[in-house]
Amino acid sequence: MQIGAVYSALLYVSTLLFLAAVLRHLLGRFKLPGLVAGLLAGMILAPTSLGGVLNNLLGVNIFQVNDYVDFLAEFAVILIIFAAGLEEGLAPLRSAGLLGLAGATLGALLPFAAGYVAYSSALGRDEALYIGAALAATSLAAASAILLERGVRGRGARFLTAAAAIDDVVTFILLSVVNVVVQTGHISAREAAGLIALYSVAWTAILAASLATLKLVGRRIKEEYSYEFSLLVVFGLTAIMITLGFSPIIAAFIAGVSIAEGMSRENIKKLTEALVEVFGPMFFVVVGAKSDVLGAGLKGITMGLVLTALAIAFKMAGIFPFAYLYTRDARAALAISLGMTPRGETGLAIAALGLNMGVLNDVEFTAVVFMGLLTTIIGAAAFSRVAEWIYEVSNSRS
Image (cartoon, rainbow, N blue to C red):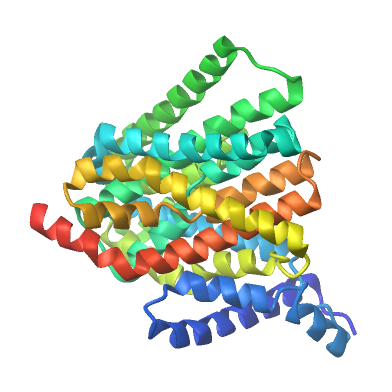
């Protein structure tokens, strides 16, 4: 018996979401965030685990990640990031300032350097560069999802949101340099500086242009179709930035910030929150479903554990000093640092790119994916338990 790809995707995602909801209820008593439940649900029903067994028993390939499942996951992550940008507009970027920029930059560069140094001699230069780039990333989706779920706002939350968003930009610039090195065999300091300047200026220019445009036309959009217009902005800007070589994650954040600054956002926020409530978990269940931890083997698991330790330790070492200078509170700085440790969507995307280009082999790819899953689960669980530390310092300094 065969089921159409669309209906198979809808049935699979619905099953994943139901299991995630059940696990979220069970894990809620341990103060674990919903995204951990989503990742676990995906891992349990992955095609390489119980999902594959069920496919064989039923004689139907229901539990599989096809293009439609990927589409729903991409839609979900864009919604999550859009909601994060919409929450407070430019306030996080203004509030974090140079400390947020410095923390995000060092928080990306330290793990990148650690991954490269640890594996360049054992695996080779190109492999180590991609592994370092995957370690540099921070999951803006994971941080945003927990802040939204816990209702944490204020100065500390703004710093975390801004730093996570800037971290994605820094990681993207690093990845651009890595791609040139891998494809050409070398890059001069001048060429690297040119690439860094180009993407930094481009990101700033796109943000400024989006803000100016929305401030000019946003207030003239009637309430009756303001939400439809906001979706047009999100996906229009995403299409433009993808064409220019940017990540859709950055585009969604810029769109949220621009709409928050240029339009009346209360109605848009309510509808976005309703959509995130329904579709938000899809991204995390699909990430879990794509994992193949059982097939990693001892070598892949061991390498994944080492990468996880490097990813957490050096990310926290990079962000903590600047988070402390910003909050003047060690507990809040620790909470912010933990919130930056999940690699989630960005780290996994870099790993997939390395595999597709033939730079990473299956074992190395699985190790990076394992690192992405572990840092997301460990970081999200730890951050969720201490998120109120950010709220406390936010209340005392707001």
